[in-house]
Length: 112
Length: 112
DNA sequence: TATCGTTATATCCGTACAAATATAACGAAA
DNA sequence: TTTCGTTATATTTGTACGGATATAACGATA
Image (cartoon, rainbow over all chains, first blue to last red; front, side, top):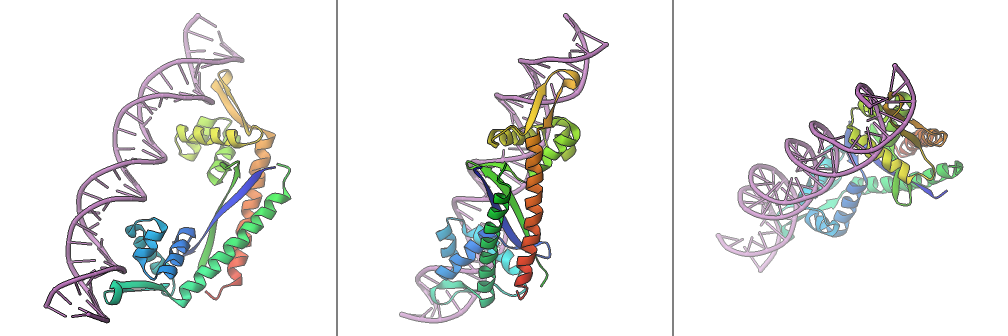
């Protein structure tokens, strides 16, 4: 009684990590801000780390997850593709389902 | 198509980690070898790390998970309590169930 | 009482990873 | 053509963590 169960899930593609919680946070922040640098600031992570994560996401995914532009009005920016949005949505749903599944599993043996 | 989903689960007690995959590996190795030092060797981890893990497990658990003895025949040793064995069994079962649950979840949206 | 292989603990050191910093390239717009 | 804020990338710096090492305490047995 009183034990809690926690989890982390991630999706891999060809042994490369595609999506985990951190990457999903980043993608959501990009969707909110329209730029990778602003997203990094909003998450209190370095631009370098954010860029590496996003680069890894786009290299692992079967279709582009973001479209990044350099120069131009505002200096450029980054935005989620429809595919990227669907990935985020799918991840969130599976993650939530996993949490409730695990809570039930733990409850089943609540004699520990 | 071709994406894989992976997970890590762990059990917490009062915001302290009680059991995760590494700790379960260690407990199984203790059960197999009868000593913490032999268990560490068999897992190729340092004794220090093994001791810290086991100490954390026993401090987090509501009942003792191992019984450790110093001195005496063989120098001492460590062995799982019945409670410890039941924890390991419960963790393994939940972990396996989680894997198959997540595989089904991913299959449900295999349009990504 | 001496020996032995443990558990238990402190200290030092190297290294891998993160953060910080610097800078180039870019393109729309003024 | 100059400016601007961005993406993209390399290099340096800092630090936290694990590994290595050393050693004390212990108790059954011979």
